[in-house]
Structure formats: C-alpha cells, structure tokens
Length: 413
Image 1 (cartoon, rainbow, N blue to C red):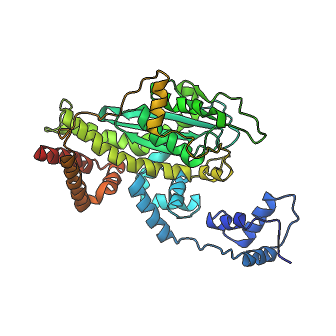
Image 2: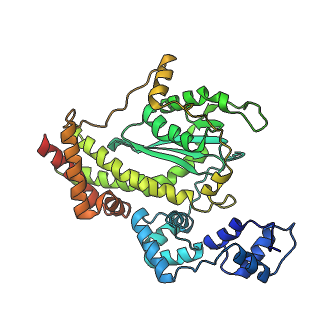
Image 3: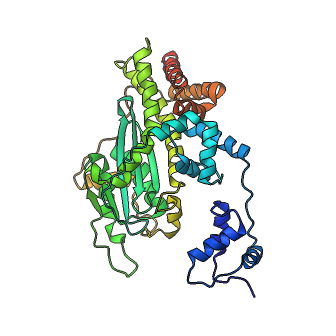
C-alpha cells in the first residue's frame, strides 16, 4: 500500500528544493505541523514516500559556491538587497539557499554594503490597512518620475493580494498608449482580467481604465453573477500603498544609481549640455537601456523573495482568480485607441525625449545603434555589463557610454 496517500508530492519536493528543510526528520516535523488533522508518521514512512515519488534531497551549495553566487548577484543588482530579496533574486536564477547562509555570504562578499543596510533601518511601510481576497482582485498601477529630467520613466503594475509585480516598463515619457501596450494589456493577456484596476488620478492611465471598463461584462464570478465592484478606481498616491511601497526598492536598485551617474556627468563634463536637445535624447536612450536591465533584475528578486506573513509573491499565481477573456476580447493598442477616441477621448501619440539628430533617417539610426552596441560588447560586456557597473556606483562607464552614443550620432549626421 502506498505511503501517505493524502500527502501532495509537490509539497514535499518544494520543502527540499527551497531548502525549507535540510533533513528527512526536519521535513517530517514540518509536515506534521502543517497537517495537524492527519495522523503523525515516522521518518522512515516519509523516506518510503519520497522513494515512491522519486523525491531526492537537494545537496546544499558549499560556502564557497554560495559566496560565488552572491558575489555575481551583487555585481548585477548592487548592494541594496537584504537577505530576503537577495534570496528571491537567487531563486529567480535557480539558486536555493537559506536566508541565514545568504546573510553570512553577503558579510564575506560585500561587508560595506551590509553595513549600509544595517544603518538604513527606518521602517517606511505604509501602515494603512489593506485587504485583497485573492490574486486577481486588485491590479495597482503607478508611474515613477525619479529620472524624468533625463527622459526615463518607470511604470509598474502589482497584484494587490500577492504583491507580485506583473509588469514593469521603462519609457522616455509617460504615455497612455505605451502604458496600455506594455503594462496593462501585456499583464491581462498573460494572467487574465483583474476585478479592479487601482491608480492615481493621472491622465496617463486613462486608456487602461477605459478598456478595464469596456471589459467589465467579462467579470463573471464563480457563482455566475457579474461582479458588483467598480471596474477601476482613482485614488491618491498615498492610498495606492501596494505599489507605492515598491518604489523604495526600484529607486534603490534602478533609479538612483542612474540619476547619480547623469547628475555627475552634468556637473563635471565640459562637452555635455542640458541645453542640447540631442544630448537629452542620448541620455534618455542610453539610460532607458540600462534601466530596463536593472528593473527586470529588481522585479525578479522581489517576485521570488519571502514576505513575512505573506510568503513568496510568485507562488500566488497558481491560485489566481483572474477572469478569462475569450480570444480577441482584449483590444490591441490600435483598437483601444480607436475605441477611446470614438468616445470623444483625446490621446497623445508616443514621442521621444529630446531631439534625435538623426530623425527621419532610419538607416542611420540603425547604424548608430549597431555601432554603439558593438563597442559596448567589446569593451564592457554590453548593456548588462554597463548595468553592473552603474548599480555598484561606478558611474564612469555609463557616462562614457552616453558620450560615445552622442559621438557616433554626430559622425553620421
């Protein structure tokens, strides 16, 4: 007779894969405490269960191996990540380790960063009560203009129940069409329709809110009734706390390092000028390239880290209750714009930051970007290498890349 027929093999497998338990006896105790309604069993019974389902204990990384992984991760995301978010980022790369071991590795690999995190202990969480019933209940959207003067704007969308960042986007200017296409529509296409969208009163979310209202008839609950909630709400930024909390993480890991680099360039360079619209375009182009790499790393770390009393955000996806949309129900960006304008709404087309000296010269633009990327790949390991230096406060490579982009453009104009 099979052992422990009531026990889910995937649950046991995750205990070892996530290194929640490091021995069979430890796993036995954990399972018995998790299922108090079931009769207790012996370690030998659990061992037989694991053999029947081909579940193996994962050999933990050695200290040297873990330190190597943490060192590489620190190069990629900088020193702002504590043990929890670092654990999440390592998980996103397939590396499993306990928080205590990660903390010890961080102390060896990057002691100055660890000391800085210890000093920055002020709790900035919004204490306002919040309640979401499930993944798919509320979708919080917001934009951040920490680097707006350099043509870099961040937009993210977050599930209210799990705090899972479902989409993040970087753009030169906040724009309804870009936000709809890269954030709202992309998230809805992957996960389904949320019951409600929550955003501040900014005009940049009008198209997303319009389509959310347009699709309200698809919000049919499990009992067959239509959802009675408003399909979207506009609130003040301080009350949109599920997404506001995350800007602290994005600013530390993405926005502030880039801003510091460009501020330093602006104050020390004799060739870069804010009055030159071509220079502003170059700052936006290069800055957005680096920001996209760093933002995705930040999202990967956040979505896979453990939150106290909540768990790991990404694990909520399995129980999501987003509404299913039939094929073709979600309008394309072009169709959404046509519907919105048909109702009398006005939208601004996407446009660049600054002025590209190679405007309307598509072939030369492609040549400039190819030469720029080739030079970066040869000298610093591409945009990823540039991002590594920037997030670790070595700003010279990003400044040099900015000036190189300008130089190549001038040579082709």
